[in-house]
Figure (tube, rainbow, N blue to C red):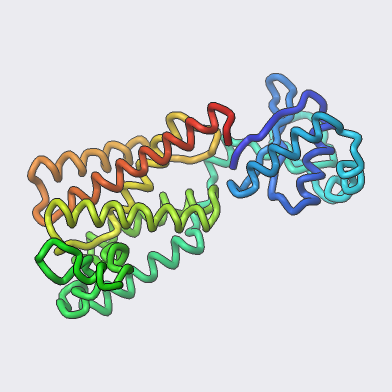
Length: 299
């Protein structure tokens, strides 16, 4: 969710918010009790740029026909939700959301694509005999050969740069990765949209898998490279673009960074440390680029 602008007058805020709802753009209107301003928040990343352009048009000419024709539809149906402690009477017109309350009671259910990835990983884990069926596992490796040339990929098996993310070799391995995939992936999918999310996951998988392959060979698997990328993205966004609404527990940051350091320090035999590092760097860069573009007013 992203704040695209604010109004000094409630009437103008309601009018523009109503217009967005009429256009099918999922949005909310929030009143700032401190300075009596009204903020417009848009839920889906895919609608941000369009909403900003519409806002510019509205500010230039709020009486334009396009803003008047549907301005009364959603306003008459929606209702404001006031905090219980507020002595003010309820007023009709819009639904108000408090961000602190939203973050505190955030939706913890899995996104659709996130859940599909979790189910796929669980299915591969079970079908591969908990990672012990070498014949099946080999089909998911980035390569089954040790020539360092990605022979299968070059021959047309392009999917192999992605499929190692579905492999897991122990209960705790898959539990750790699926837990973080659910928590981090669902946030990104719901706030940025499914197309953004799956594209991001595939890029993270490709980069982390190729990094691990180039550094240590083809015998590895797991979703952790993707997880580290998702973590890096959200960690940066929380620091430099908190208005995007992501949440990350401070202890989680210590745990994930600590495990990365522990792995490179020699702990945890068989850990795909380079996949973790590759995914993390991509996530950090992607998150920083997103935050920078927004702070510069370019997105």
